Length: 207
Image (cartoon, rainbow, N blue to C red; front, side, top):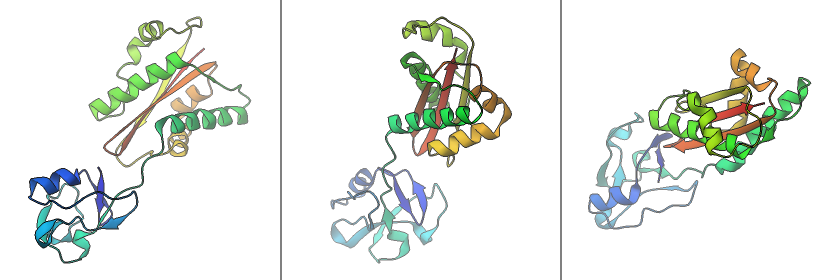
C-alpha cells in the first residue's frame, strides 16, 4: 500500500508498520480516503514534527488529530494496458497530423517494449537496456513480419510522465524521439511498468 502524508508520498505498508509497532487496528482505506491509521491504546501512525521531507521515519504516537497523522490512500493508477493503448492512439493521432499512416500494434513488439520498461524499473533509470538484443527477442517472441529497421523511445523518472498524454508530449518535444514517432515504420508495441509510483515507459517501432 502506498500512502501520502501532508501531500508527500511515502512507501509504507501500513498494515505491516502497524503490526510491527504493536498496533492491532485496521489500516485499510479506500482509494482517496483520508484519516488516521489508529490501533489499540490510543496510538496512531505519526510523522515527527509534521515534516513533509521524503524518507522521514514515521513513529507511533498518541492520537492527536493533527496534520502529522492524516494519511490519504492514493487513487489507484489506471490499468497499464489502458495506458499502453492510449500511447498508441496518441502517437497515431500525431502521425496523422503529419501525414503518416497509423502504426499497427504487434504482440512481439509489445513484449520487447515491456522487457525494456521492466529493465528501466530494475535499474531505476531511463535507458535502452534490452534494445541491443531486440532482433533476437523478436524472433523468440514469434515476430511474424520481415525484419527491418527498428527504433525505440523510452522514458521514466520519479514524479514524471504518469499518464499517456505527458509521455507522448515529452517524446514529441525531443527531436530524436519525435523522428522515431514519425518514422517509416508499420508496427509498434508499448511497455509500461509502474514501480513504487514511478512510471517506466518504452515504445518499440518496426517496419
